[in-house]
Each structure stands twice: as C-alpha cells, then as structure tokens.
Image 1 (cartoon, helix red, strand yellow):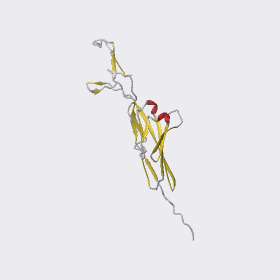
Image 2 (cartoon, rainbow, N blue to C red):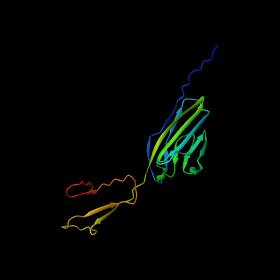
Image 3 (cartoon, rainbow, N blue to C red):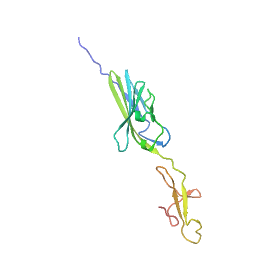
Image 4 (cartoon, helix red, strand yellow):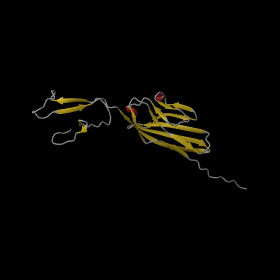
Length: 178
C-alpha cells in the first residue's frame, strides 16, 4: 500500500482600506486591517512595524493568539486588540509619519503569512490666517497699489485662494500674486 498526501490549498487574505491614510496631528488614527484564512489555526501572530522616512523599521508590537507584546518604548501610544489586526495610534504626531507594516502569520498544518504596508501622512490643521495691508492705512484711492499679505501660524499642505465678494480672484492687469 502507499501514502497519498493531498495538496492543501491554504490562503491568507490581508486587506487594508487604503495604502495611504491621512491623519490629523493630536487626534487618534485607526489603521483598519482585516484578515481571513481557510485553514485550521493553532496560532495566529500579528506583527506591526514602523518605518520612518530616514530610519530602519522599528518593532511596535505583536500578538500571538490573544496575548499582546508591546515594545516598552511605545506601549502607551499603539494599541492592538486581538484577534483584530487593526492598529490604533493615539495621539498622532508629526514624527508618526511614514510606513506602517503589518504581518500576519497563521500556523496550522504549516505556516502561511501575508503582509501589507500603509503609508501614513500627518496633517497639521491650518491656523486662522492673518491679513496685513501695505500701506497700513488701507486707503489707496488715487495713489496706486495696495499689498495684502496673508500669513498663518501653522498647517500642512496649505493652499491660498484670494477672493473678492465671494468669487476667486485671478491674476490680470489689476491683480498680481506672489
């Protein structure tokens, strides 16, 4: 007689809603990750790593079944609640911008593995703009030019748009922008 080993097709599917996620500085950010597999599992391991713009990947935390092992340096910043593979970052800081790598290992009749990378961009809310006029009196009738300068304290990915009576102004003989 002889032994026959049937080929076992076991697949692990790991999904993220987007490969780039924008968060707001000071707010919590939830990196949603779903996984499913069609195998019998004795162990499910979830690992999260962070890769900053100029740094090697750093270990954040991992879990095996229901036990979470955080990196002690980051234990109060990152949260994982197994069996969910989603990561909570709270609060989000500029230094958290970069790539987050999630890896899921499932051990059953062999080990299957999958990983995904999520790029996190941190946005800083724009502060209220201040408009200064030159000359400061604002009265330029019959004189010539007036210069309006718009500044803001902080914010990322800022776009300026000048409006007059609720309508956008465009460069032309009466307006120049710099």
